[in-house]
Image 1: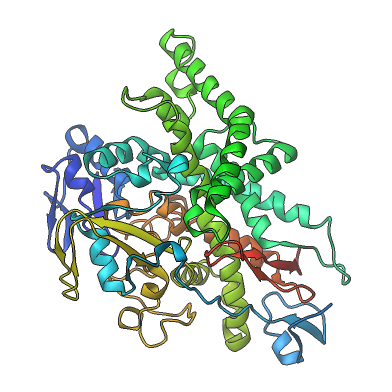
Image 2: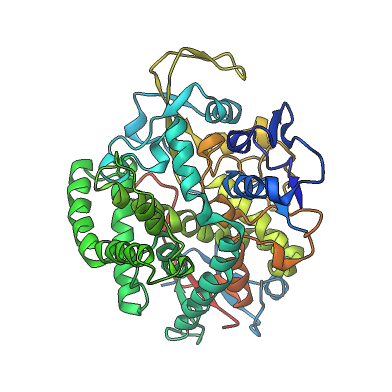
Length: 65
Length: 449
């Protein structure tokens, strides 16, 4: 499972961080996942998919393995 | 009577979108852009018209919603008007309506068949040259009615008669929900639309709600499976009804989806076709690109930038604010009108030709090619990806089944495939009963239908 955040679309609305600050964080450049690769689908899958659906700007894309 | 038309030469004809066998013909000139004056409704408010200031306010946590105060009977306490945690939770509840798989479903299984039906119906009305014709405002609306009904959860929009009736209700509900921008007497509009809404409730809304309540009981009793429940707004509201919601809240929430569901795209499509007609006259080398989805997407974004579905949004400062972008001071409790049209034509944001349509315009991050058309910050339009398409990733840029171009591009691709052109015998007309930058009628005809 991978997550891609499109920097052209991210507007730092903070929805992803509000869902789970342990999985996403905001930087001056926008949102980013707290780990760069290797998400655990069992542990993080629901958070990532909800963040993808909730992001108002459509910046988050989750790519299932 | 042919008005505002001209005879065009053979070499220009050769550059027309889908070209016919004509050697000489009349062609309708694109409508000039409408002059947008701020509505009287906001004349006493602080008006903000620069891109940087509006962008900052929309992202700021120091402002709350200030729009739709007159239209509260239609939109009160709906997602659009909430703030803070209440807004976050409502948005979280409704986000699944626009999940990736739902966007694929709407585009491919709902919108495309509707586009094909609407285009086919044009064959019943041909002009003196034997070409099918129609009004693009009405056509676009009818292309989107089924999808709007499906997202919201309104049953029974499945025959020509019921679809027309549903469309009429939505037109009136839209008038009430945007009464602030009406050029008619506002109290008269509100009273009139409340009467129509009562009819809509009896005709469509209540039966749809009742069916979902019955399905929920059936689920709880084990008579149906979870997968049999509809995936729509009304089902979400029935399943998650909060004790503090007043009985009419689901109706007002549904009104938001019904009005917004087709308004942005219906508003945008005639503008895109109008601009592209002028663009191809001036840049005939781009005619083949009318079959190119990326070009149509750029044209859609550019048109959304120039022609906003809402003339203005209002915000109220929760404390004294000094804007970082310009140093402007806004007092606590002050209501400001954000004028999107001049902001989206701001030369400091989009260049010296910001007021011109240019589908080749290069817009670089953090600017959006559509500017402020979908608002910004936490209140960014929840259906934005339905119109703009999904973000592409390096993994799926060439895989059509993993991304979408948005319903605007989808409609335009079908229109240009059918050889759409401005009707040379009838001029487009802007809507005069409101301060919206919208066409009332946009006559077109088709060369390849």
